[in-house]
Length: 203
Image 1 (cartoon, rainbow, N blue to C red):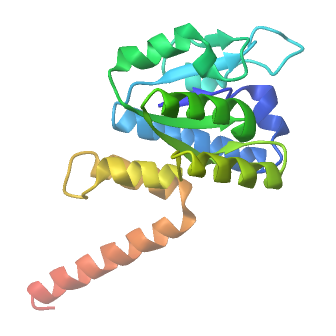
Image 2 (image 1 turned 120 degrees about the vertical axis):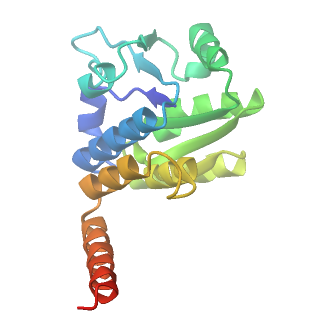
């Protein structure tokens, strides 16, 4: 899983998605990576420049202390040999990308990975740029190149696959913390279970 330019200044300046919603989805994706123990790569544009886009979100760097931030000068990460080496070191053939900007760095990285034979997913609700039109155009371009746009929930659901598998309780808690309606679903399920138990006991 790649968190791309999820930097404090860039996140705050996003226009295609409200910055708070973008951050919420990014941190939900972070939790998905932790629950399913996915290898994580962090990369940023000039993060040490105080007049630049700012550092990576501390919520990401603190969560993955073993993942050193790959600081780039290239717009797309696939032009950086250190990034490619980090991807190859995971020994995975699928990349899950999120961050800023969907129509520039994210797009260039995703297209480069596709050309190299990787299966690439871009998490649309955890990625943003500076206009809704640019976001839509970028996702269309990526789709036409074989990149798959997904939501962070779709990523989690595909990894979980079956509620009888391990991590189901962790995923349920994550959904409860991020989706208001999920609490209603959970409450309804608990009510049905209690009703069934009462009937079984003859009440």
